Every structure is written in C-alpha cells, then in structure tokens.
Image (cartoon, rainbow, N blue to C red):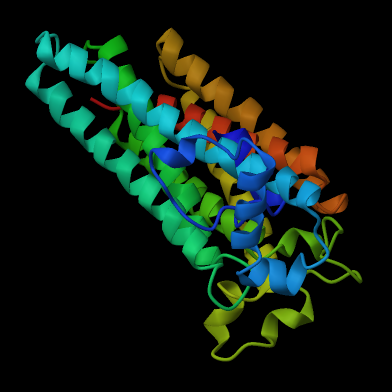
Length: 316
C-alpha cells in the first residue's frame, strides 16, 4: 500500500478517478464504452482542463490504473482485517483488551479511507492539485494506523512484562515525535513538489544554507507550512534531528543491559536512519526520480517500524 501510494502520488495519478463508489468502484472499466465514460468524467475537472488537456484515452488509462490499484488495496486491507476479526470475535478467542484495541484499529482504518477521499476532493474544485495539508493527514494517518497495528501485534507476540528505564523510554518517545513531524514534512514536500527545488546538498543552492525565497510569504510562519522552499529547508533540518536522536538512543543503550529484541530494535534504528538519510540526500540531488522517491518513502515506513518496535520493547 505504501509503495503503490507513493507511485500514485509521484505519477500524479491521484485525481484520475473523480468519484468514489465503495462496491462498484472495485471493478475498473471493462470495455471501450466504459473507458470513454470514465475519461469524459475526468475531463470535467481542473486537472484535465488545466494540465492534462493533451491526454489521450491511453494516457488516461495509465494514471487511472495506479489510483484504481491504490483504492483496491485499501479495500483489501479492510477485508483482511475485518473478516478474521469477526471470526476470532465470534469464536471468543479475543480478550476484552484486545477487542478494544482492534476496534480502535478498525476506526483508524475507516478514518484513513475517509481522509483519502477528503484529500482527492481538494483537487477537484479550482486547482488541479490536492491540498498538501490533506495529503499529510492522509499519509500520516496511514503510517500511524500501521504503527498501532504493529503495537497490538507486539503486545500479543510478547505478552510478558519487562523492566524498563523511564528516562530511556522517554528519549525514544521524543525521537518518535520528531520522526512523526519529519514524516508530516515529507508529505508537505511531496504535496508541493518541493523536492524539485534546490537540488544540492549540504547547502540548498548557490552556496546558501537557507534559500532566500523562504522569506516571501507574510505572515512569516507561512513560509514553513506553505512555501516550498521553506518546507524543504525544515525537512532538511528535521532530518538531522532524527539522526541525532537515534544516535542518542544508541549511545545511551551501550551502557544498558538489553534483551535480544531490544538490542535488535536499537541496531535496526541505527542502520535504517543512516540509510534513510542517504536516500533523502540522493532524492534531492537527483530531483526525485520515481524509484528514489518510492525508496525514500519506504525508508520512512521502515524507520517508523523500527521506532515502534523499539518503543514497544521498552514500554510496559
């Protein structure tokens, strides 16, 4: 889902399906008449009228495929969760605590589906681009839904209590929050195509630490939530903060007696944060080629996985 979602965004396929039909939308157009109807619907909206007015039906089929596949996988995730959940529920194999957790996961999954459509709607009105705020909400909720699901699974896999170091756990929590903020800014970068600007490292460009266009918006704070240059700058700075926080976790853990899972979690964090940092640098230098953009998004997903695993292993 993460891979296909990234491809859908980077190929500008997300606005190719202009309506939402939960059941019938599962089946794509099956003949030329249905394809023509879908294409005519797409032609009624700003993306075709302002950007893709040169598209043929074959061009449209290319972007339709990725959005359709993205939505199909979303539906499959729902089924993969709901059907086994109902089975385990009716056969009374779940504790009350696990049932409550699963209901939270179900609510998160449903909310994520709503955010997907809410995001698409923002690109069907005047501008042929979705709101980067809604994109960030969609992506972040997806990642957090996965993290919550992983946490529930880990609670079941590792039911025994363990001794924890409160200060060390708090350090992981702070690192987790920094990582979430970085993921949000990554979505901002994707939504505003900020990765196509300032394709130099370590300086932004023209040997400057911060590009001067960060100052063009008023009031000032908008430069860091709406200005592509400012957003890329913040994304770069938070990347350093993520690396430093993970290095702090590793440094503090060296003098602790860790269980094998705890040690694996910390080692995974070190490896993945360095890999993700390198992917981010190359993604910027090469102006976000599709494969690097996808790899960078997967890297964020895996880093969140390692952070969730590590935090869970150091929590009661």
